[in-house]
Image (tube, rainbow, N blue to C red; front, side, top):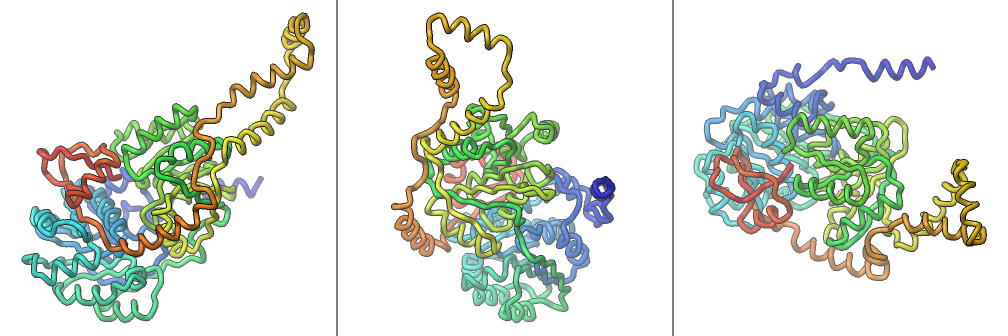
Length: 513
């Protein structure tokens, strides 16, 4: 009993450091609180004062530690917002570029900050035009950024802060020469930050070359994912996602879960799908009113909502200890998001399970996450209807054994005996129970084992060939409806990316969270 009391006291103890105490502007604190954050992570607690002071910095921290906020919050705080590009962030992949841009936009939205994403595959003219409209932040991949600088396409491009994010991954992808060359085009008077999960010698050499008297901050931990979390992945076809997640929830006997989606419209649609399938599901994303968000979170905590369908950012402020399952409707864009997501389960010494759905084309991203996070993820097959019916029968047997017998049951049996023998009565009653066990979806879901190996081999080769492709985009304040879905994402790919600026005439939707 004394031990429990001590734990309770530890849980309610006030933190010594909060975002309010770090000296950030009220507009930034408002965005931070809207995202659900109150206490900075260790890397944020140590890095933010250093960056605010204008010093160069090397930050060594594993994925999932909040590095983006560690540099973006103080960078936004120090901006002059004079219409020029003040912050350049270089990331290894187009997926991470988009995510970092979205996160910076959310933190800076109350300041009117505009961000542009720049990566290969789209029109140079469009990207340069978006930058020229007053962007304060450019988030770019090394190849396209170097190409733009070498061609002299940007006039007066002199960011006062440059951030290298996931430097060790850029080294692994062969971008080190590009990085060195990019810095030859940047002003020598600048603040430079370098973040890396590991510090191999080439990264140390790069840091010594591009940073001036940097502060070194190291946040390391023995493991990045909880060993109490069982991690599984299922390879399916794209059109099977809804059927797969319902089948897995049914087979797992899911009682309390978080389902992560990439977009707001996907959250709304999937929460309706799961509700129609009989689950007490509701959605949570950044476009909801604060009162509505609070109602959903309260319902999830008090069990009136059993399945929370959410975007990454919306779910980060949720701390509930009895979540049994985390489902990744799509594989997350980067390892950091994966760690954040699955960390919702397996809390307070309980066991949890993290389940990820992916197509063969996404298998390369899975391998990258496994390598980066150093986690163990096992492949499994979605149960068939036959498999699930067998499990259902076992549950029915258990329920019958534990069923309380009511006095009225005797009356029903006596009436039935007039026309039906007892054995037939028993069969009919059990058949009534089986009729109510509706197993939704097709008989088989997912790619069978005999086809999977060949498909994954082909997909891996395609991903290697397409690794550096992509398009750029713009994030700034605007009046457009950002409630589109996968179609909006496809449209932005065709025209070179999304726009968040003061362009009320635009009719295209954007729904990144």
